[in-house]
Image (cartoon, rainbow over all chains, first blue to last red; front, side, top):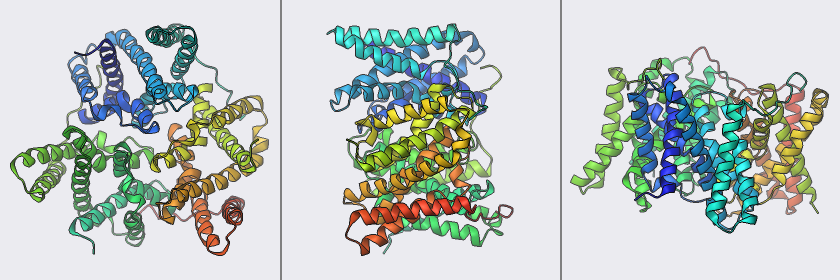
Length: 205
Length: 205
Length: 205
């Protein structure tokens, strides 16, 4: 029986894979290429985290992530005429994935017991955001998260929220909820109100 | 004395490096840059595999791979006016490399004794195909294998062939030959008859 | 108290981060994206080295590198109208960083006691030059060091100088100085006299 966290993780994997597969199809990748891009979007961040933490990449012993990426491929094929209408749903799923992956990354790092908290925040951010960077490199585009909207910064805010709420609450579930909620809300507000980060003027440097 | 498998591995390294060096020269890389791209094409897949398996990257203790990449560089320089006529030979060498690297990747993973077979297939595919992805990222192009022809999928077919033939044959050499042959034949047929994978129509997603 | 080598390392981190941040701003990255590119330029080479050596990435237990990348971001913001006039200073800082990072990479590899010297030279070169490659991949450009000027080759020359001077001098500081000086001088001469490496003519291959 999958746990509640498992189910959230599958939703996140599915949503991340969808985003990679759709962009790959727009660039005329074949189905295998689209699958690889979807899979890399879904598992890329956690893989980099696990390499940095020197632990076995999480997907190498559990096939769910490959399977959910495959389901995402079939889904994109079957509903290719209707995906645009589902954009809001995908956005919600993607944001759930971002929030959950970040918290998973933070906790996996903390559980190793040797890293300072700021390293855990970076690992959480990598878990949540690096898959999208790999996706964009495969698509030969400048990573979207470096130019638009608040994405990786939401993970950092989630990490700081994790740290602060841990000082106040003993119950880990409350800490996890506070952290994920802060990521989710930051991202939703940023997208809804089109809030982006400032850019340093280019003309002068 | 190099073994028969060593010789095949040098042929594969040479062919992979040639492909990287030629593409780098076309994009006006200098000789050092061309060498790095050639080397990365040849050893990139195996390096990612070894990082994922948490084992010492195979080339760090044995200089043959660097030397054969250097020979490839000299070869491209000396025969730069005649390389196009050798395209068929390079294709055969490249496909030998693909087949052998995949089998080596599968067996190295299985020998670690902790991974399921599907992980070994992925590791074999990464060993064979990821070097070309790194090459194309260095060249700032969309990885060719995601868009054209059957390449990485041949590695997956080789992995499945390895698995099936292992159920029927005790002799490892037969299993290795069956697996490499399936990769070689898949790729040759795909290129000869210009068989590619389907693409999901872009207009709708 | 930071040691003399620490200070050189911070100068190198600062200069590498500046180069990444400036290029990111020219491509209209937001401040977070610019910071990530600067950080990746500064710590990317050493991170790849540490993953290959299977040791904890150097920045995961010491926050100085993140902080100096942050100072670089503030510096670029504050002095954005005057940075071009500082180009020569940045070049000197960058070259100090290149020299020092290479020597650090060589010694970290040698200290592990299992790798041949040529592997240490490669690790030194990766430490010095790979950050710039990651930067250019993030910027979606062909890595500059593959096409222009002598950059990574200066690291290789530094590695060979390290090896040779070690045969003659027992004093490690002399060896380190000889190696860094050879990198620094090679790079300065190459840029001042616009010396580049030859390219293999493209028309024929």
